Image (cartoon, rainbow, N blue to C red; front, side):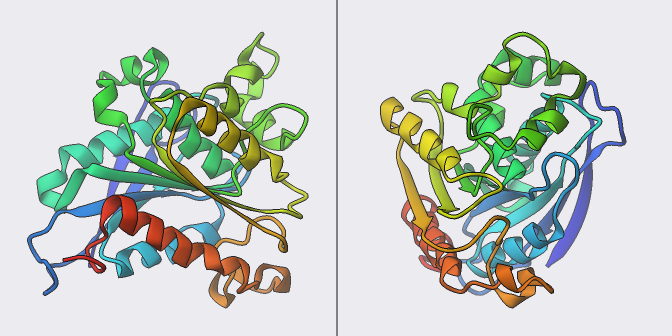
Length: 280
């Protein structure tokens, strides 16, 4: 396996460039010539940091299934919307431009985000064809559109069930800008062009209430977008894989029952993107 890092520079960055770390599989005996799905992971952290438990351990799952992928170290506060979304858009376009070198299928690029990283992935999912994303990057909408998105206990709404801290960090000095909170409330932005979506959440989540995923699922239903939604009756926020490796010293994050989202998502990936290890 090869690791390569690529800086991503977009207009308006207040800190150093974002970094896309690409994990490229070496040639393997199973379907060695087949182009593989490519997954871009966006960890959570309330737009103030990026959680380690939602980075490499998650990406390694996809690699084991025959996907290739990358971790995006996107810009957090003091950077403001839409900088991080433009960085993710650039990452998707970069993957498409390297399809031969990275041996990936340009029609099977999937974003996977957790918590605030779920808001970031969802933002590109609803805003990929908006001028404020593409025009400053000099890119066309078709270059930055994800083919699918996996949203794990995502921040979605800026309404009554919002995780306020994420929006304060995301908008910064723009927080009081008229109408902007409604713009970044993603359930308001879903259209028929939003990519197919896998969602999961825990019912007792007291940090990012389950209504965030429910509101997004309702919007997807109304727009006629294909999606899969799983709500677990136990567990809190930030579980990642819900196994020892990602739980660390926090016993509350070790919940194998909630870890069932991983094989469920694997089946969703197989159904929609034919991961190489499951179908030659």
